[in-house]
Length: 217
Image (cartoon, rainbow, N blue to C red):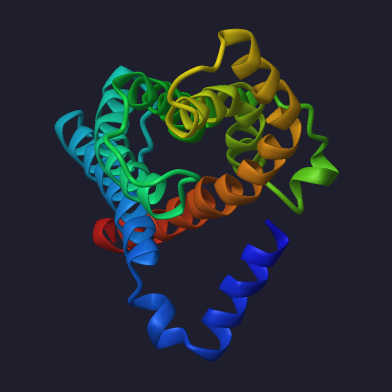
């Protein structure tokens, strides 16, 4: 993983035009921009229909279904391309069970990124002194997507294993592989998810608040 990160940062620093126009970057950009666009569109629609402040953020079933649909369709396509590009075997069709496991993984992440933060924020044990530096909403936005990776990563690892080891592998061997890689892979996924849905979620909420505030003003 370290060599990969070094190569990526080197490409971004010294060959930014190649990095920003590469297929992997385009897939990632489409995934997250599409997901946030759907979330913001739904929030704006519901605030308008329900006659609420324009900056209102929703967290109900409609938000989960809408963001999951956008994220799943984009993420499954991205994963199918990434698995073929970076997979340990020659490119071949993605097994349906791998798609299903990736879908379960992404549903958990989306729920923790868009629905869970508003639900848990009021219950976070932050003192008034702590809230001077970071709000409950921002704290929840960082914690929820990161913590859910401990649960969703096994789905990710099993899906990859079913693709990389197509036959002759017992279920016990697959679970053993998942168990060995679980903690390291969970932290690796946290490093990817926190910038996307932690930092990204806070920035998205703050930017939307300011923009909607200007419209209302």
